[in-house]
View 1 (spheres, rainbow, N blue to C red):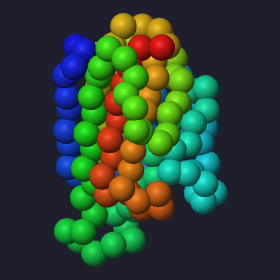
View 2: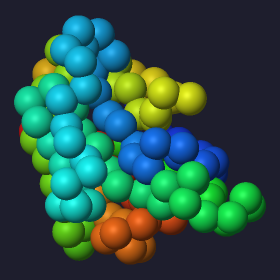
View 3: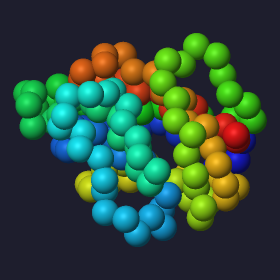
View 4: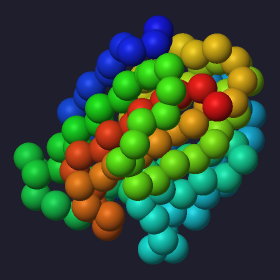
Length: 131
């Protein structure tokens, strides 16, 4: 994905989180997102954003809107951020059911987030910029 391009998805996340990692990450998922902290949890190899869990709401009420934008520099006004290494240059965004791949230059990136609800987000904004 080139700078200033966007990706938008609307779908349910049956695991209650949007997972982000380098596509070539060989480490098992290492975040316990059931501990109640959040909405953005991170380790050296994974990031998780807590969203409405599709198994806890009525059918048709589980959709989460995800808006991703790659920019040339950080933006102001987003309350959560994570410095994240993307060695392959391929960032995985999704869950076990479906995912998207964002192509970046290999190296460190800043992931900035905003969510509409810190406990059960239904709209997540992710802005990706170089560190």
